[in-house]
Amino acid sequence: MNIQSRYPTTPDEFLRWNEGREGKREFVRGQVEELMINVTRNHAEIALNFAAELRARLDRKLFSLGSADFGVRTPEGIRYPDAYVDRRTSSSRGTDLAASQPVLVAEVLSPSSYGRDFVDKLADYEGIGSLQHYVILSHEEPRAWFWSRTADGTWPKKPQEIAGDEEAIELAGLGISIPMAELYAGIECRP
Image 1: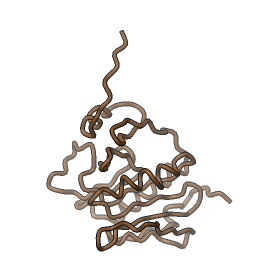
Image 2 (image 1 turned 45 degrees about the vertical axis):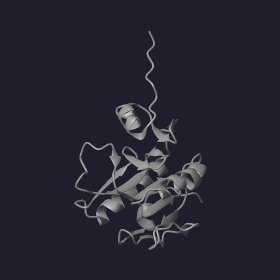
Image 3 (image 1 turned 180 degrees about the horizontal axis):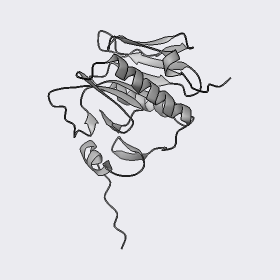
């Protein structure tokens, strides 16, 4: 007998349904979206380097940091960014399945993710009231695109773009700067 479970219809149902399942998926606009599980070595190392640089610069009593294994609620569902920073609150618990006050999310590009990262995810992440920064990192070269919420609470129409090892990602909302040389140390870049 083949028993199929019903797909979730709300973000909370999705978080419970997705817990412990193999594979990778997100919940977007009421639908479960299957995602790529295999990433390049560059993708994995850049995501890890970014998380490590955040960890070295932020107070872990005030913020929790993590990777693509932990959810971030958006107005449209649940996303799993490559890295995130969540502000700890009195309601934050070790058993949470999603960030409660995300202040930064980051994605590392993959050949198949350009449209999702620059369009779909940007639209979803912009709707998170607590979010201060959205960062996209190239998987091929030291290049980043990032949006930072302005003082009046709006998002710029275009991202800041930086390229090269001598540049740094300025995250004023967190009071930190991350050198590109640190993010791309040991990364095999395209010629």
